[in-house]
Image (cartoon, rainbow, N blue to C red):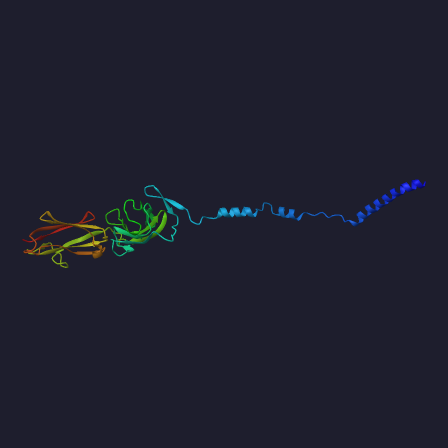
Length: 317
């Protein structure tokens, strides 16, 4: 019996210890509380949120270039010409001091009288090289009007520094440039250099230019006559004018006894006569012995090729 007891005791002890261990674990260790992982919630709270790298990429594609691209403008002949959309101002321009004159050496002007023609554009240049591409872009009343281009020193040798004096603007028809505002932009190799403009003044009224009221007199301010006594040395032709411009052309044909005797043709002296008034300084004369020859004298007056006036007088025998 003792051997049986000894054999079973260790086994019972193991059973008791196992029960105690199991019971103690249930009473001292709390049951874990389930929870949602914080990191997972942050990821799923804003679906589709772009990363920092994605935002930076979008921003970069939206950045506009610092210098605007060149705009290709058509020339009157259809040749594409590069022009800046908005002319940048170079730090050091090769063209400068643009001005407009009636002739080289005259004082610059920003307004010219009605009918002005042959306006000279002058400008100074520095640092030019053979082969530089020069563009002249004219505007009339704000609209593109006339375009010219040339290769520097190809046809006219100007050198690196100096003054351009051979660019002259003419009207397309007799009577000069149309009234309005003219503006010139200058470019070198597609880069705007300088610009400037002037105004051609309009005629005083909308009426057509013309002459009227022709008569003859012995004195500039004398009464009208159609017959003068023998020995008269000088006879004036007097007439009114209106709306005449600086480039209008006047021609006078004098006849003696039905034959062409003298012809005078000249551009209207605007700075002397102006656009409206009375011509009283045109005459025929002979101050050397006996005065004008007896006979029938006539005059025809033309304006821009059209006959405006015609009349005659007699020197008595």
